Length: 96
Image 1 (cartoon, rainbow, N blue to C red):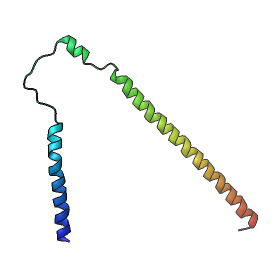
Image 2 (image 1 turned 90 degrees about the vertical axis):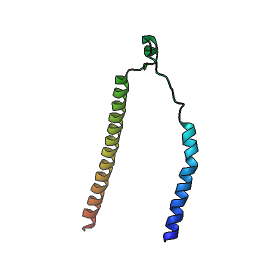
Image 3 (image 1 turned 180 degrees about the vertical axis):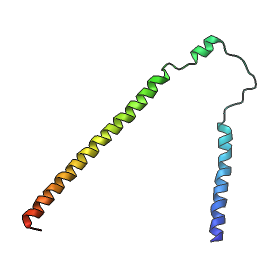
């Protein structure tokens, strides 16, 4: 039991050590200087789509998904009620 535990943790440690060079290499280069941006550079970097549209679109998608789920749930409950009525009438006919 102890050896398998040690092997498992040793394997994990080796995998993490193998990933370290990839993570270090993937990090962006450090910028050593600071400069202020001009108003034109700030305006060029701004978003083209206002955030309010995205929020309303996200809420719309969530509400539409919720409405579709409720509709499908309503249909399934209706089908179960119809089947229960059928079973009830069958049981009344057979006298059980």
